[in-house]
Image 1 (cartoon, rainbow, N blue to C red):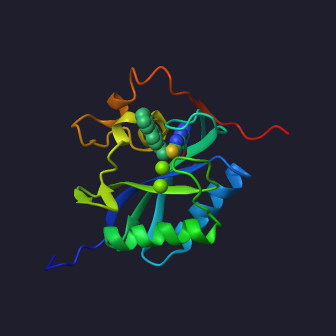
Image 2: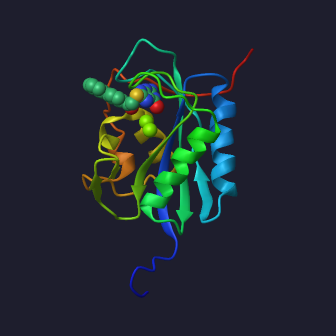
Length: 171
Ligand code: X6L
Ligand code: MG
Ligand code: MG
């Protein structure tokens, strides 16, 4: 391939919601991603109900991970996920506070980017059970930034961070 041309790059996105109908919010984000030019959804984890990390006095999250292939550059992909958050009505109130939808770029091919508003791989990927568990579900052999496979990274993880399979709302 020549010059800037990249073809389809694999990327992994983390999804999270702890406001409103969490499952509807996550599904809407996946649907919009799949309908976006330059993005193909290749895989989707189960949903996991997870205890909040960082700011702990808020509702339980639903988290999941989606695998895409994309012709968008990392920066175009960032613009795209921010636009999807906007379209789904995300309002940024306090830092680390409750949100109806959060879409984070976890990995983009083998790229490393360190810019103020865009860090890939996601800088806290390896510390977050709510990201690693769904990632390991859909990509157990994926090599992480520390050289381990995803399936290795989830073992013996953070006793404090609960990540439970979500079987749907029974109300
Ligand atoms: C010390 C200080 C240790 C801060 C950890 C961790 C901060 C995670 C922010 C931290 C710290 C975050 C989600 C969440 C958030 C989510 C669950 C964040 C940003 N997003 N908890 N907390 N799922 N379970 O998607 O990730 S806020
Ligand atoms: Mg996040
Ligand atoms: Mg985010």
